[in-house]
Length: 123
Image (cartoon, rainbow, N blue to C red):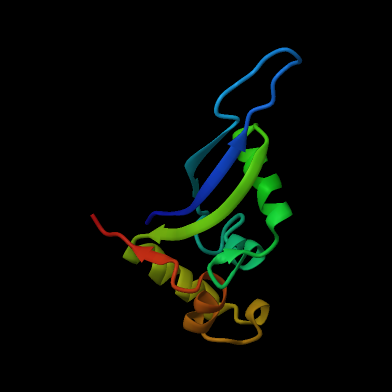
């Protein structure tokens, strides 16, 4: 069972006085492992994403800065990449505790927060 949140992040380099850098920003793909459903920060999708995009850009930049330890100029959500086992476990976790999701079905919850940004990858 495996899943990761994938973001496009633009980092900004800060230099000391008298030091120039080019380019001043670099775009990178950042993958953040998703906690197993029902464990740790498994509700990250609910708390940070809305319709397949970051819900609060400032908060997302702060998160990305904590992951990377560099200033972040921009961050956008690309996808939740997961395998079939993780998707099934995620849907089961949502269905078994519908209260945090206003009683909606797992399908509705995932669509509301992730839009069409779910990619199932089975090797």
